[in-house]
Image 1 (cartoon, one colour):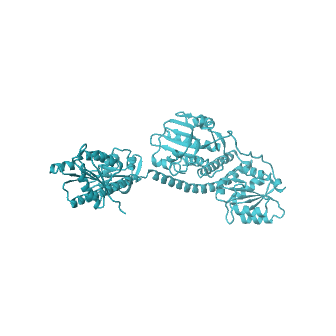
Image 2: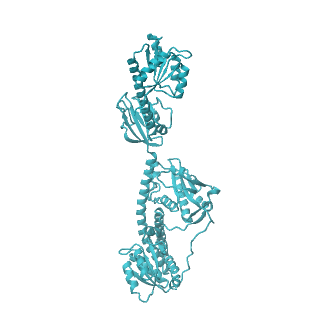
Image 3: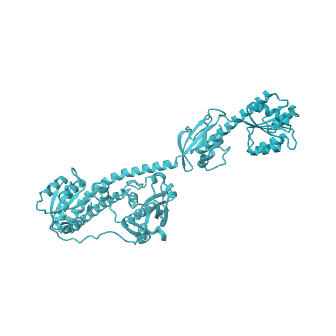
Length: 632
């Protein structure tokens, strides 16, 4: 139900108040009265009516002064005012009344119909104005609440209106009358609607462009009504694109990692055979010095192949680590001489080590490889000399840090930070984006494998850390490594020393689908006195074990990934039929990768290919030492 309008009648003549009030009350309005301006202000302060009727000539405060005060008060400034006068009826007085702020002017005697029509007209105007102000407030609230930057420009490109998000995007607030192209130089003004386009003339219809370190998506359209104007909408997609690029990079690295893991598996199989046969040929004792030297070179080449496989596994984060608590500063100090030697005389090495860098739980050899790879990369970037600086510090990673790297899950906590910085040639943005990809290199053919920084990435990630690179052409490069800080005693490790080798007599079953690997394992074990049986897959292995009625087989040495029956199924079948039979698994894949793929229980003994013959025998003997306890 609509609310009944309330009208305040102000007149010092009681007869006038009575006559006007009677007409208004008969028309259904609620009427209150005041005999002078001061009384009217008191009533207005108490309750605001819908309309104010004011006589002009009154003692103390006339109607003109009252209207001026009403218009000067923010609370009453929009109140409709109707002036009524019996004394000032000439056109000049009417004009003066309207100019003082009145919305209507009537003179006595007033015809009741005219009075009521005028009141209705002023109330309609007040309702329309109130609705317009509400709509304006709602529009302004919506305009400001929009997360995108919005601005309105005229045909010349001058900014007329904008919201807070637009201020944030362009970094300024005093924008009225400024050219849009002055705050967003990547745009230009065009003659026709929508008056704004990219520099090359491309229409602003969901297009993206770069400006001042940001990436914006923009659209523009002409207002359908009123003066020619264009509404431009800008969305800051910088973080979104950065996150998408990181996801794409992670996907590329994951794809490359799968490829690298497969390559490493094959290399490990081949290097196992080459390293083993080289060892046996060298042990034969009837070689000429030339042949012996050739065999040493073959061994070196095989070691390099094995090292490359280890680098591939490091990148894919699937290598076997032996972490222990390390004092980072002590590790870097001990490496200083080696790094200085690698740099040569025209490249200076500076260490800036902070005492609060603390301890980290990492594989010492792998951490040293990270630093050496970065140092070698820096050396190659400083062809004409320069400075390599290595610094450490302690830093807490939290939300503010995570906000700088959208799309990456940052585990909060205290980290030791290692920064390796050079003054070399630097990298452009395209190179920087691919710097950790395997086999990507800017070096000439034969000067690099493209695995150095990929290895750094993999080792740091597998050590639960983070690594970022910063660089620009001619400004050098910086690599920032973050490793979780740990507490305890430096040097603590769970490593178990390898037993000394001896001759044995037990029977070993070797299971591998690669004949050369089986032949090498047989030769290595027989060299130390062990009896050897062979099987080319899991099914044949089960047949051989079933035929061993005298239980001569003491241990099964089996590859994990094989046709027909993989290592996991073989392990489960042997555990059921021969629970006391010892099993040692080998693979060109790493143990943690096999566990991740659920091909191997992480508690099962495992040896990583490639291996030297003596390493295999040492693992076998270590397991056989458990045999009496297993049979007890």
